Amino acid sequence: MKTLTNFGNKVRFLRNKNGITQEKLSEMTDLDISFISMIEHGKKNITINTIEKIARAFNLNIIDLLSFDDKIISFSYPTRSEIIRAINEKLETYDYETLFSLYSFLTKDK
Image (cartoon, rainbow, N blue to C red; front, side, top):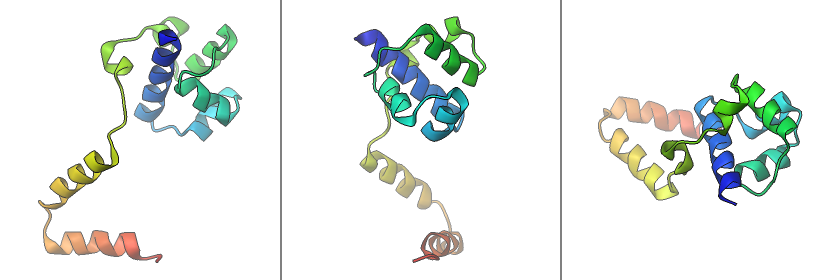
């Protein structure tokens, strides 16, 4: 159902916007992490009590949580290649020392 997908997209959007993991949202709402995942993928029909818990976690009222706009409805993660391309474009602007420092940081535990 489109409403479940829209709601799931909104929850995922708000969670990412606020830097909250599914695990943290699970703790904040007292909902199982797999249940959060199913909500975000539009695969779970939920009760008003669950909607209220999620709204409270984001400091929203239920009406705001249930109102969808095009930006959120069409929200999707970039592909792996889009992420790598964006990182490469950004890295091209850095000098060698900065790149070497980043490289050292990323490979220090290997």
